[in-house]
Image 1 (tube, rainbow, N blue to C red):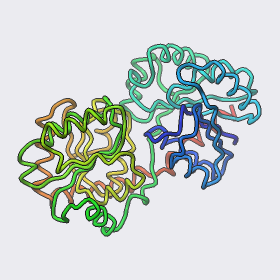
Image 2 (cartoon, helix red, strand yellow; image 1 turned 120 degrees about the vertical axis):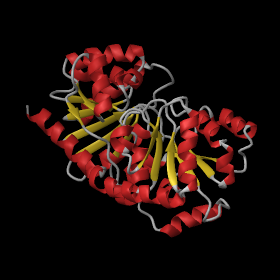
Image 3 (cartoon, rainbow, N blue to C red; image 1 turned 45 degrees about the vertical axis):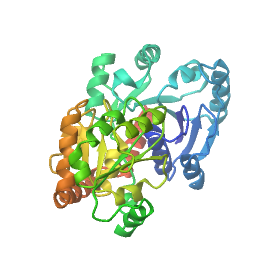
Image 4 (cartoon, helix red, strand yellow; image 1 turned 120 degrees about the horizontal axis):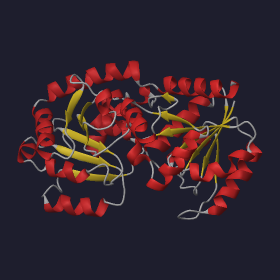
Length: 366
């Protein structure tokens, strides 16, 4: 099959990483092109796709809605003649006007978040029309499926969970010790890791408030925050106000997340909403206990034997969960071992790719 993966950009984010992993896996038996509406950022995702021989095209879209991008996309797709265009995030408004120009092409759109947060109200109206005239929707988990049915009044065509290369996250202990040494953190000090955009959705402000609990200081606990975003300066100021500068590090965007996970005792996520987050799967694959708000598909990933779930927006339960793991590192590591066993049977990217290829094949043949 000739497959085009269409996404706004290849900057580092959850949906972008799904596209990269999926394209890489499907390219073993199909012709895959990744098309980004924006410009090249030189991200490691671009490098990874290029390294495995996946073609990457950029349309250099101007900020805001850019009608010229519709024409550029139409020209590119008429040249590529894909059997399937697989869309992500807010690209359908650029694809729908040129769909009639691409003979026998099927469109599949994956929702990477619960329906209410997946697109702007205007884009949601367009998507509702698209789903009634033949665009097939894919949900990434039960919570997203439920929200899709409530929002669009119909079930998605399929439910396909995200996947990751599980083995890539199982690093030797020495990798984690090297990270700790580089950050001057002692081997016996508890370390929590958070990975994600510094945005309203992820609610790092709640995490910092919880981490200010004095009991965590007594345990010499550290918090590493990997990621960047519009709230970085606000969070840096909050760290100073709370007196956390010696124990909380804003690391920026990192390419060594597996090594960071190896250095941590547990992973923590304080999001107000989520779809089916890759980073939780990554943490479990690395054998790390998970502390997370109970949002989106997270409860389907994290069981009582692999981590601790707390209500969204509540700093006190989050602090209690962190203190529980910081004060019992043996118990924390036991949760991590169970998480690794769970991940090995559920999360590998090969299962995701197989399900997408089967879906695409069935659509092309019918």
